[in-house]
Length: 569
Image 1 (cartoon, rainbow, N blue to C red):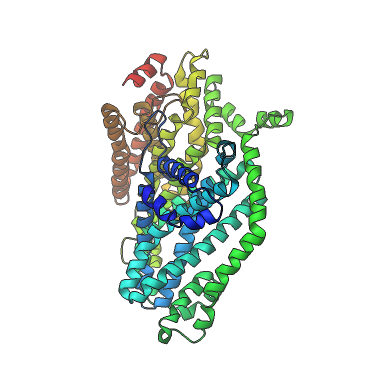
Image 2 (image 1 turned 180 degrees about the vertical axis):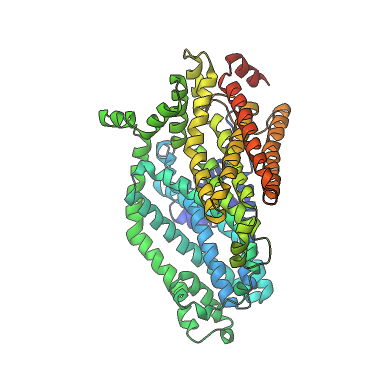
């Protein structure tokens, strides 16, 4: 893949040589850059475990995923109104491309290793500049071409061979618009946030995109099958004439003027004028300011934040310290609580892996409740008569799985030597405090929101079910930590492949929430018809609470010998 792209973009050798570049040096630089891209993990992918051999052929994988993403939103092209279909397709394409560039393009734009590695070498500035530009073009090509391939083929098969010649023009103009939006977005982020926080903002973009992608996969099929969607007409959206994607869709009128209204051919002129104007604005105004702010990011990354007396005093009065003192009696547990609270704030990997799971709960619930062909209004009206709220309460256990697994894993796991150098008799006290920290910080607020929704729809008669679900899910989370992740917080390296016995234990523990959930659902269904079974819920709650207390006592009394056995297992 990389060799083909390198050959393709170096074909106009005479042009690059005319621009003052050394072809041999240009080829060597691009080859190394593409090799590094091939070993870089995907932004939404799983982190490569340290000490493991890096996964190769990442470029081919990213091209495949881009093609798969492009295949997912070709459905507008099947609308009866082709103009409307093209407008929706280009709009979704522009949104996806812009978000992907915001997430990943920063690694290409802000790669300043050239300054320290290549500038001291006998390489002229034009070769260096051209290598960066060609690297950006190759990067764009690897994203745009596979994403447009499915739409290109589909639209060509529906219309004529002329579409095969016109479609690349529309995609090229849309890429120009996307680049303008991305650079503008970068400048806005750098304008209203500190340079040191730039990567954090990009991280939140990644989280938002992963949630959006997940929601589209599950909810888009229902929207496509909706009769109202199939009957959409472009004349009903007059405001769309002010959007660049509308101009690009209107350019198809050059080849089929009889199927478009009269004013379309005048609007289609903007499909050329608009992107060219954006290019001029980018070069004239955005690029100088953009280049000046890139250097601030390097300075911010290299600068170390030094604590001041004011920041120390503020941290001593922080909210999390008050919670640690309130929820923990032992000072060692308080330390574990504080470590978990602070580390989850600072770890981008933790946020990227855990935060999206909070959005999965409502998406799953909406997907399950809308599987029937009934209108949404009717489904909402009949919802209080069902027992589906039990499913909603136990869906929060998906968050628990990811939250607790990331509590023990870290990229900086070697820093855990501090635990072994401290005079801690029972490491279980640290683990106990860390568990409370993430539980209070993440799970309890989310469960409270779900509980408020349940009370709003099903009434206050479900308070006992909410309490029972909370105890059962806490029991499940503690079982996961006790059996599968019995380690000190942020002290383990994430393994791509778990050992067989540990995997079986984890699989067995995952059956626990299913069993508890089905038992709870059965009790709810029976209690609605037999009032005596209300006391069965109370008995279930008492038994779960006793089991939770026994498991909690075992977990917090974990010894150093038991931790060593876990590492050897």
